[in-house]
Image (cartoon, rainbow, N blue to C red):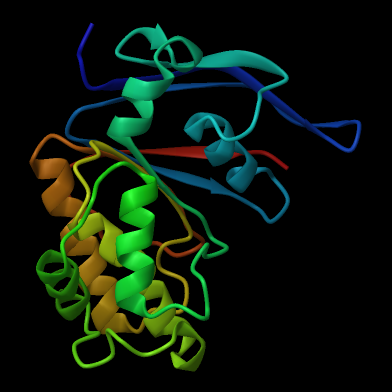
Length: 208
């Protein structure tokens, strides 16, 4: 079994007493990406939360390197980065402070130089110290995505990462995801947009 492999086996999710989806199974290996598709309400965000370990599944399990994630939670958290559609950034903190805070929470202390470089790469040079509340939605999204430039995680779980980005930023993010996959990383993402992802990819559609 590969040390960098994600297996989703028979996952089921219930919300409000009704079945949202059931029997979802797929695998993702090092150097691969998967585009999770589905109509609004199909459960894409819920599935990502199950895969991340943030929510419990009604049935089935998620395995990392062949081991159920509940049995290797610490190792899995160190190898996985989850960026939700609803940004978890704090409006009263700057982009720089948010980036360093999120890194620290993930157990990856981040020095200011690297943090500033990550933000600058995503077009936030000169805005690093501004309170997040004064930035546009696109700039806030870039501030969150800067985590991708500073993390050591191999598995990226991204919920609608292209939302609010202009075409140039979309191209830049696609390139960043491609580089991660080319270096043996794994990317599982949701998006209503179709983007030209290269490398080895898969598509999985959830039925509403």
